[in-house]
Amino acid sequence: SEEVKAYKLITELYEYYMNNIDALPDNYKMFIEKMDEPLERVVCDYIAGMSDQYSVAKFEEIFVPASWKV
Image (cartoon, rainbow, N blue to C red; front, side, top):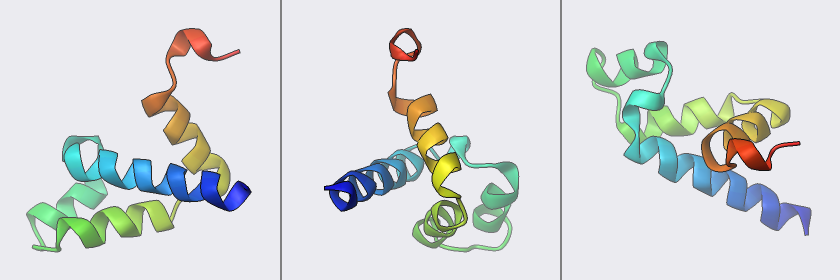
């Protein structure tokens, strides 16, 4: 179902950003580095602020090989 796909997309993005802090936008990294916000909260806030289209685009950018894109 579509819910399973959406869950997988969000879960994969979450795991990616938790393991690749440098991939976060600078303004989100600032919350971690200068304001001592927990990484988990910052990653959740970043993903929660994504539109559906943006989250799909980021997923494709990160996980789909360029040669597979049409």
